[in-house]
Structure formats: C-alpha cells, structure tokens
Image (cartoon, rainbow over all chains, first blue to last red; front, top):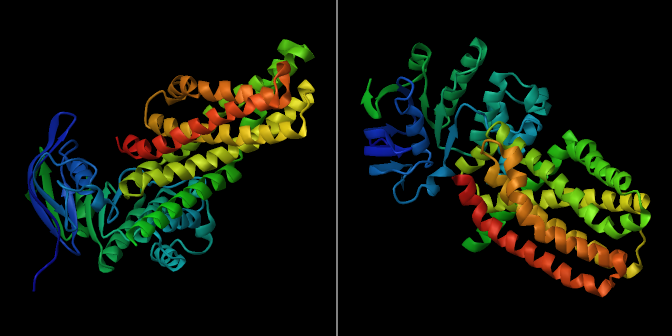
Length: 215
Length: 234
C-alpha cells in the first residue's frame, strides 16, 4: 500500500531578509500525519511553515505541497492549506457565526458546512451568536480552526497553536487536531511545549539553524 | 465556462467583503457616532470662522468636499484597522482569496458610507450656509456626489491597503492620499459650485468636471484592482 505524500521538501533553501533562514531542508510528510516541528527561537520553524503555505519564495531545491510545485506556482497551494499563526485572523466585531458565514461565502461553502464545522469545534448554540471579541482565547482559537474546516484546508499549518491557552483550552485544541486528522486533514505544527506536543504528534522533526532532522 | 466560474467567485468574494464591512459599521456605528459629528463640526467651525453668508455660499462646495476628504481618512483607517487587528487581512491573503475582489467589496462599502456622509453634509450646508439649488442643479449634484465618492472609495481603499501594515499609518495615509485626491477636490468643488450656482457658475459648466471625476474613478478602479493584490502580498 502506498502512502500519499502531502509534502516533499528536498534541499530547500529559503532566503529571508538576505539571510538563509532555511538552509537545505529535506523532509516529507504523509497524509493523515500530525507532525511537530521542534526547535529554538529563530531556528526557522515559522519560515518553514510560511514557505509550506506558499508565502515565501523557494530560492533553491525542490518543494512540493499537495501536488503543487512551490517553485513554479506558489499561489495554487494557498487555497488548499490553512496557516494559523499567533493571530486568529478573525473579525472581532462579528459573531462566531458571522465569521464562519463570511469564510463560507468566500470559498463557496454551504450553510451545512458551516454548521458541521461549528459542531466539530463545539461552537454551536449560544456561543455561535457571541461576538468574537467577547470569547476566551481558547474559544477564539477554536473559531479560527473552524474557519480552516469551512475553507476545506487539506493541510493545517499551525504556529504555536497552544500559546495563550489555559489548560482546558489546550486539551480542547489537542482533541480538535486529532479530530481534524481523523477527518482527513494533515497537520504540521510548531511548538515549544515539547511534552504536550509530542503526545499529540505522530512524528517529530527537529529544526536547527534552518535544517530539518528526524527526532 | 472557466471564465464564468472565476467571475462568479469574484462576485461572491466582493459581496462577502461588502456585507462584512457594512455589518461591522452597522454594529460599531463609527461613521454615525464619530465621523458624522466630526464632519459636521468642520462645517460649523467654518461657518463661525468665515461668519459671512456671501462668502459661505461661495465656498460651500469646497467645504463639503474638504469635510468629505478629511472624513475619508478616518473611515479608511478604521476599515483597515479592523482587517489588520487580528491579521484577518493576512488570512485572506494566505487563503489565496482573489484580492482584486476584496478591493471592489471594500471600495463599494466605503463609497456607500461616503454617499451617506455627503447627504448629511449637503443637508448641513443648506441649513448653515443658506444655499439653494434648482431642479437641474440637483441632477448635477447627485451625479457629482456619486462619481466623486466612487473615485474616493477606490483611491481610499488602494492607499488604505498600501499603508495597512506600515508603522505610522495614521499620518502616512493623509500624507500620501491628499495629493492624489486633489483632482477630486478641485473637480467636485467646481461641479458642486455649478450645481449650486455659486460665484455665478452655470450648471452646464459642471458636467465637464463630472467627466473628470468619472475618469478619475475609472482609472483608480482599474488600477486599484490590479495593484491591490500585489501591494497586500508584499
């Protein structure tokens, strides 16, 4: 049985502000994996995630994400991946439901897709009518992840997803990511919380000075 | 077939952004509670400062459009502050959404807000400066407002996007935008003067200025839709 490769980087170099933030990274990720990127601050984790999302040009090497060659067409991959950085990318003045409906209109998803995403993230009921500005950090994170489901992102790229969450929020996030994996998504996330993140991940990669090694 | 699908997707994105911007405004009421009183105060302060009915009637057109342009800065900054506060604009970019459609959605929402503002400002000018307008003047005035605010909507959205992620955008936006909107200020003022019959201007003289406003709107509509995406992407 062949395993579908969602991402394949080979000797990838990414130059950021005239500095090779990633210098010869070689790794691959299979469909359905939850992969943890470990590494010190400035090791190149965020740069790698942004490059996977098609936001940074590949200076050298070959990079393939979801069948798209990032050296030839970085835009093509963007609609199929979901990148969540430290911010949630939500409109604070809108309710949870309005945020979800906004994303659904953008990508042509149905109301049923929105309801399913909110159900999966535990955002149905009264919470759906709450303004995002009035949500807790964990609820906002769940709302942001629900928007990834509405957008039908096949590859989730998360930068420090546990940051700013309390213990309950972190547990909820872990459950959410496992559920997303079970639903067919592949997750790559960077985290400094090694113990918790390792328990969640199916595989870990260590990023050191812009290179990637198997943990 | 593919072209039709792309057009439909663009329309869907533009309408989603348009609805979102107006919904946020309806909820926060920044235009009604802050921008309108600010623009109204400008009109009143000029009335105090000039304190002469003849002069006020002559310069009413210019005062309306100056107040509109000052208000434009506030509305544009507020609109993009909402989009950048939790990196929502960044999310749109990352998600591969057609940014030219985002541009049109935001520009049309901004234009509608400016039209609402101008209706109130023109009403205030009638009350404060005792100006009068004929039936033909009303037609010219309405056309002028629509064309001028459309141009301001396009150029405001383009420059709002340009300065959205920069430091000191509060001062940078007026600094960059004021010279660019000078043609709108001049043309809209002349057309409004013609509509109101200020300084002995004839209504027929106003239509040439409306033509200039239309060209300005068309240039920034096309240019903005082409440039907005790359500007945000950078």
